[in-house]
Figure 1 (cartoon, rainbow, N blue to C red):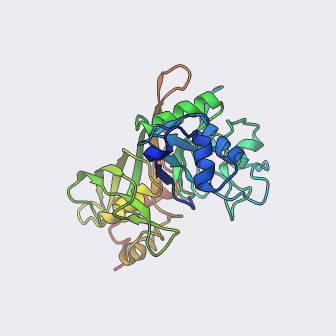
Figure 2 (figure 1 turned 90 degrees about the vertical axis):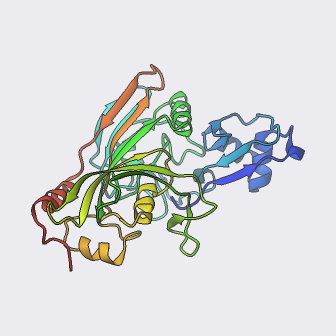
Figure 3 (figure 1 turned 30 degrees about the vertical axis):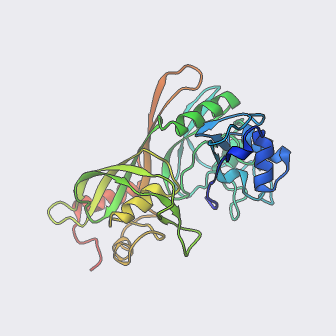
Length: 323
């Protein structure tokens, strides 16, 4: 989550050039690295995976995902390291996990071997190679402190299928969040482009030239009953930008409880008395087509204890927020 995607619009004068040669030239990397990124589905052409020898026509849009640009992690990213992970489903094509809060999905600086991928390596799970092999099987991510359902690819065919489904926005993702304040109206659609914060490169923000992002939200409960100052909100993602739910709800004026990055002074003060261990966000449901059978699969995960305890506290005690 440390880098933004890079996009290129193919000019007419570049028509006829192979994609791998174009990418190596534009990024200043070796052709072998460009080829690995394309084969690992880290590069899309007009939103779809493609091949290194694809001839460009002009007018296409090439997107390079952050993983293709990241510097290697100094330590072996797949050193087996055990961690408690719930397995919701597994077959020869995919594995669906219930990621706990506090666990990073893949190795990055500061988390070289204490990640979900290291835990899966410890249990002997073999995943499809992506790019240079440092993030096998990863087709989407959850923030470290966000819990919930995550799917990983075990074969190259499954990886291509899932990347294609994410690109086509046919994968359904439903989140549960606890917000500071009650969104008005109680249901709506947030469409606001997301990009790097102009002054803080570790954060994201609503920016004019950001990437298209859409979140549908619905208030499930206003909390506490009778004198609400918080809410249980369901969010359905139409797109999947980094920190999307957190940025969009903060933009709406209702940041997540426990969010130290995007929270307001008031929301941080209110969160101080709650048993949260990070932002109150849980990836509850993930629905996709099985890469091999085509069957529509839906997986659901219950929120972790910290989220549930906070929710019950808000349901029963109106004096939990700071004044």
